[in-house]
Length: 143
Ligand SMILES: [Zn+2]
Image 1 (cartoon, rainbow, N blue to C red):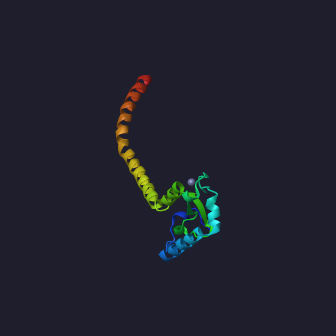
Image 2 (cartoon, helix red, strand yellow):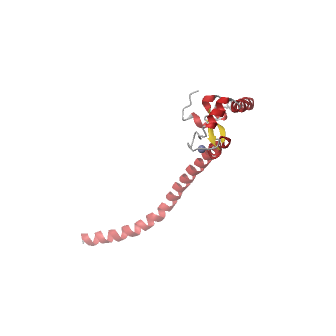
Image 3 (cartoon, rainbow, N blue to C red):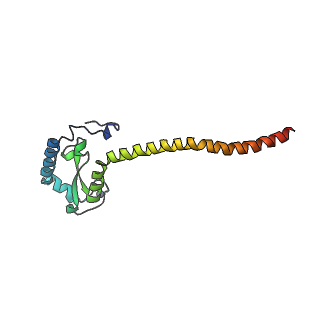
């Protein structure tokens, strides 16, 4: 399944279908019982930070999260240490939070922009003062 960067933040309802997630989680559980997975974790290498861990410290991580349309297939399942797995897991549900923070940041910068506008008359007043001084200076030059 091809994913454009733009669509990455859009959750497909079909992907988050509870029945599908349940099925994929079951498949992941089955995958964990395969020799293939035991070989993966026996290497003791976290897919993300490339650090060495005990096999028992490695968890099965979906490269493309199930909620993003990932599946519990060998190609999409990698061993990950707990910190990497949990930090990655946080990534997905907080996308909404990040989007919200981004909106707030934009709104804040907009309101800051309007604050700048309201403060402009003040700075204009200061400018006028300095302009007056400059004007009188230039007047002096002309005289
Ligand atoms: Zn790691």
